[in-house]
Image 1 (cartoon, helix red, strand yellow):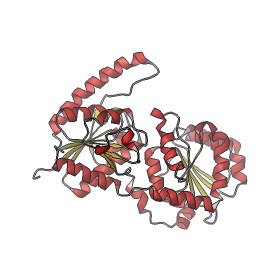
Image 2 (cartoon, rainbow, N blue to C red):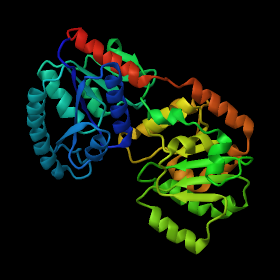
Image 3 (cartoon, rainbow, N blue to C red):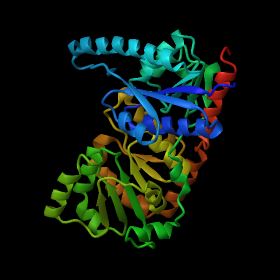
Image 4 (cartoon, helix red, strand yellow):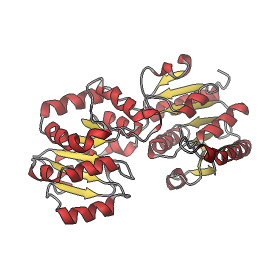
Length: 372
């Protein structure tokens, strides 16, 4: 191909969709530096800030999700969907992509659907072990479907599936510090076990409440805890800690910039069960206790967590049980080296490295043989 490769990547809404999308874009640029990439996202969602910050152009669609609780509100949703389809058609016509990639999220629906109608070969990337509605619909016209879990033929045509894993943030695997150095940088004792608690950039209310409820237990324990509360909850938690007292072995922050160092320091991680988080834990071989969010479509985080639990690669605590069970289990696990080793080794065995490069190579194959 003499002209530069042009690729549309669509989707977003959460970091779990945006991080893989950016990783795929970076991998395409690494393979073919002159590739032109255009992102298509949903107006008002986080991709509209994160993608430009990563150096890529993005167009926004007014698309929104269906409201299952208030059906009358979906009249406006349908209007936005029709408008988004018209806008997607115009974007595709003007950009003239050689292929389209969908990573899930509101915008990927109208974008990849319209790409298929216009004869553009498409690839979708499903991060979860339980496929989302949008990707199940798009699978009918997609040429290739990249998945992160085995057994996805129950959702997609078997002949289209490629087991690639989920792309993760590249910098996580490039930490130069040893475990001891990472712990000392946090002001902790490298001899004692470290638990890392993460609830995503916005935080996780149940996990945060579980920590607040267990402050006396934490204070008398022999573990050290790094607690990322999320920006939404941080000020209120600081206020509560000032009233109740913050244990010396508990360090609190709203957001962790150096996640590679935090992971390196951690002996055990407490996390929601989003697809990107699980892929990171597996790639790094980190023992974890997963608390699936109950507020997601098709309860897909529980399915994600169980894929690890069934292989003894993680422990799981239900959201409804977390306030009573989470911290006692975490402290006990962090002080049991045999359990940590087993969980970490089994998680590492489930990792699928080089996912972004493999997916990028599949995109290039689409362009080279668009009729297959």
